[in-house]
Image (tube, rainbow, N blue to C red; front, top):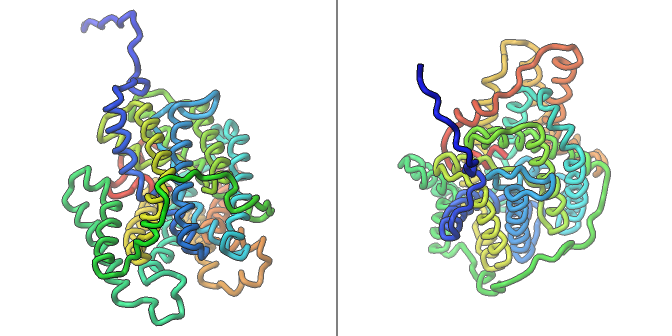
Length: 472
């Protein structure tokens, strides 16, 4: 019989709680920032462009986002009271909120006036997330693969047209001869091909940085042809502080709040999966209390986002993949990454450089990113029994509902602005449909539903640029 070794009487520090030397913290933290940066800044850029914000306002959004990302990541990894999972989880803006926020902002008139309604909804949804965290951590069983897979597929499918509009020059050019110009499409295609080439090389580091390097290469090419104006970068200050409520006091309207609550419901499911995944990778026990603390951190970060001129936050799975590859499990590395993001958020020149990325270049990168979102959804749908007629109907009807706002826009144009803020977003309408049909078919009828095996999904997930963050 094999002899069982005795455990040391002295408790060893768990790798998650290991405090590395400062040089290592800085190096590994910077790696997390690089892996996360492109996906982090693309949301404020997309929203700012859609709402017609000026370049200066767009720069402020990017800097506010980076600052809040840093603070949120520190809270999640370090932990304060019952807030924060105390795991190496990086926080970032969720892609799930892009389409609903655009619908809310445009319904309120666009520009900074639209942002104020968005921020009112974001703050309220963040407070609700914090309050509901303990309850939600026990309700994950009501979100089987058919619901989560459908929602992620819808997110990808409805966001791809946004990327294609940017690839054609930007939505602001629709109806003009410049829209769809060959040069714009060339920039978009060149950026996409560059990203694919980096992934094809197969080096883990290049793959994790492919989107960021693609944006840099596409912007450089556009600059060489005289299509990038760096004057704003030169005029921007080196240092600037994001002030609370920079655009004015938020406006709290019912239907935009409902839309944002649906967004946070989806992100709570995503964060739950990320927590279980990182727990498996780090061999750290995860229970309902851990999930509740992670969700509270999402809520606090989202409230901060609304106050500091940013957006809803979620744990980024992309950086979970980096933890797996690097095998550096210390949560203090994420704290270091958060500090670096705060520093970047205080440098307006960095934000103005990001804001100078041309629409076509951004669109080329976003096509791959949003397509991966849909692919992750299809992957999760593979865990659902689609031979079962009820599951098939949940998927089919939800997809149809999600496409309704873009294909029959006049129908929604006749609705009041407040109602359109909820129903005018394909993501929100499709997600609500999937959740309602699952309750009708599989919950209220006492039918058994298969819960998601989060670890299995993370382990079988495709490698690629931005795969984790893009699932958000």
